[in-house]
Length: 219
Image (cartoon, rainbow, N blue to C red; front, side, top):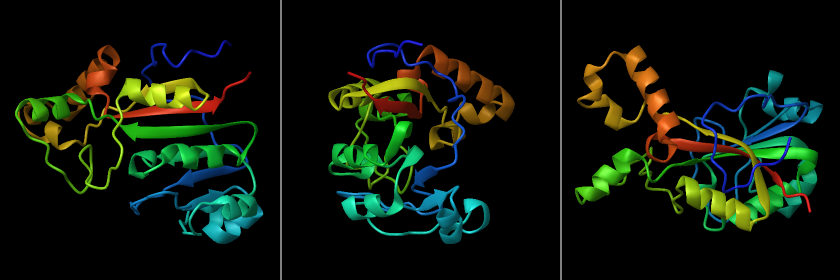
């Protein structure tokens, strides 16, 4: 199928078909939420004999093997899939890390990347009322060095010569905004259905995180 332009509408659905193949690399791995500046921390390698030895049976136990740099990239080899879960917003130079990670992809491999949506409706409402309160986690995480909207994320990836081949957003049902009235009055099952529908209608406003599958652009 044709590769969609980064300027095309990002479909709103859960990423389908992204099942890590023999080698998958994910950073970071809960429950650690390190402040990442100028590089990344590798927390999980699974699916290889060496990975299992480091990560435990089935690759389920997290570990820290150091700052990701040229030396570590050479040591760990290449992967089919690299997963960056809310990482690049913590970096001073996210493009530098992504370029390095691209060298760690096998031919045909891809990166799955997620970022929080700074233009979420709750953030817009806070700004309209003159509030921007940092928190330990969430959209106003005090360790964020970068902020992304859907458009700015796509523009950033486009400038890097990367194609978005699939994408979506999360609904963020655990956000503090949904624990307050009037949302706290709504039964949970109904609230989830409502948020899913709203995120489909207006992902830029109701998407909590944007998730994209990215690949190097073919010349």
